[in-house]
Length: 127
Image 1 (tube, rainbow, N blue to C red):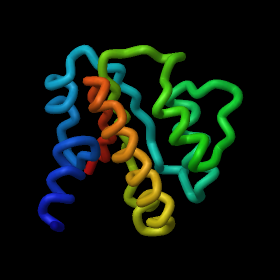
Image 2 (cartoon, one colour):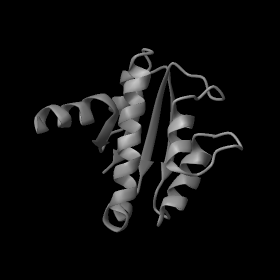
Image 3 (cartoon, rainbow, N blue to C red):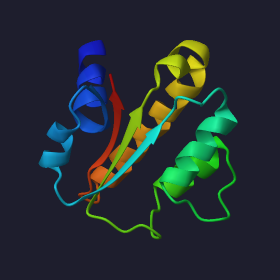
Image 4 (cartoon, rainbow, N blue to C red):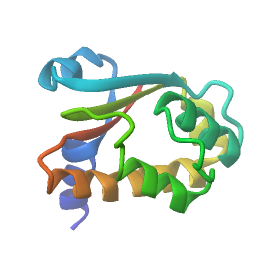
């Protein structure tokens, strides 16, 4: 079971890589968004950073439900595929792992939603 989950986790939607070009080349028609989590110290910081980079609408509520709703909508930013590249996340993993974990859970659920619509939806952590 764990191997299957890891495959889903890494193959479908969440990646850890040193070369983002591999993902960029695979999904050439993607909307690529890049940000840094260097200054993310809390859930609110994370929400603000994602809100900014993904150009969320003004009604975004900066909570987990609102995040899920927005990333499963994306009408304001139409694209064939979506890739969010996050740099400098090491401190987040150490200081607020539960926040990063929840982000990944929501992202994986949303990636499954987008897969049914034949849209790739990737989260890339650079290492």
